[in-house]
Length: 99
Image (cartoon, rainbow, N blue to C red):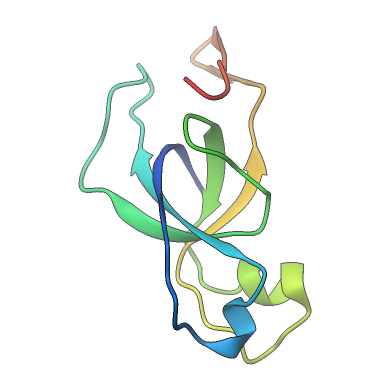
């Protein structure tokens, strides 16, 4: 799992049936100091996240199946939760949602 910030969303008029009623969000992984790390990615949103939220992203591919109960759904990256705060190396960071 990785910590990321939601920086955008995708609008799709045609998508796989298993993605109906779920959003696809653009996430940017974060370094421990909160700076962006690497390229932006597209993640399946199982946590009702919004742009600006700090989220926990599962990168193993099976999380979307567990959240939806759909064994056929395929998603490499899944937003599993919206973080209120996190602590790395003794430093606590409080998320400011929607910013």
